[in-house]
Length: 455
Length: 93
Image (cartoon, rainbow over all chains, first blue to last red; front, side, top):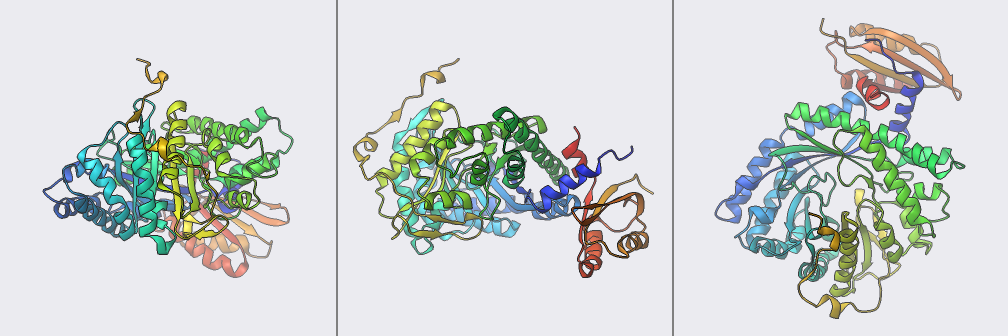
């Protein structure tokens, strides 16, 4: 077959890769570990370790091969496992911590920087395993390096488990305190979800869902820089034209994810799950979702109109992605983490963006309040209040929402918190000074919304 | 010889004597067949796009890229070597 790609198209691809930082953010291998249960934490942990070592032994090697073959950077290789609360149901929280350490060791052995699945799904209520796992989260995140934890506290179908919301406020505080000398870094590896996605490739919220196959490959692809450049090139485009331009570009980005996913799946002999096309920023200049919103015509992110701009962007990315891949992941859209996006940080410092505007924006972005540092003396009940608000947005709007928030010990509004690497740094943001305590202290569940009754 | 396996080589940089000679010599040494070649000046920069068949070579894409880059560095040229599929996937359904 003759080669039919024009020189312009070749150069467009080269430009995306060389100057616009298009990359595969992650190849995440999901592994079911439910058959690894044994009589205690050590025996169970060892079985999990061995299974991961076996399944993921070629993950990094294959990732590197594909990177060379196609000339596209693959930034991270990661692993997600079945929720540990299910595998460990009946074990104690001490046992859960031991399992966490084995997960950490397995991740190190496989050469991946994060492993997700230290997870409990408690949207309707707690099993014994859920209780023990959640109690083990602060210590596990303090003594391990690569383990990521997540807790699903609500769904549109089940409502919100407010007991879990109450509990997570305290757990987040404890996690921050136990990792206090690292600015509360443990909290950067802990996500509280509503409507958690079972095949999410992105950390810290990835876990291998209970409806998933034995093992699976999920791809997370990014590319804010590519979208930023096309938006910049069309300062006078109408909204319809703008959406169309973003769609076309998201299509091209997602196609590379599809290619890499198929190649990784074939080489590893593991089925291909989904491509998640998410504009996931990094602290690097130009790799910013905030810059895209600004280039649409906002002076700063946080200006009135920011939510509408984000809604247009998020939807256009999804539409482009949906055409490009046979299986598109549920989180596709735009992430708006503060600490990982230079433009977001700039807006916070300028006083343009506060936590209330961010909350509004999460109702139209792909996930939620992400990587936000708040004062270390914030009461647990206020953190629970933030989680409850975010979960309510997710539940009512049938979307995934999440809270990844860091009450940085000893820090106050205006201070900076450094996490390093991809996690970046964040300015400490103000939260409401008024108490949520009596509300959060009520027990039970917020009932599922009326539109859950659709059978 | 196995089925053809096409790669795209691009070279970007300041125009100078011997760019194509350098690339094509290396390709010949490793039994890589050039199928198509085109060059243009883009915003003052020399841009060459070469389509080649690597199926007869012992080298893989990564190794070839390394060899080319070693020669290109002293000439201040930027070289990419990629399997054709990434372009096909991105631009064609």
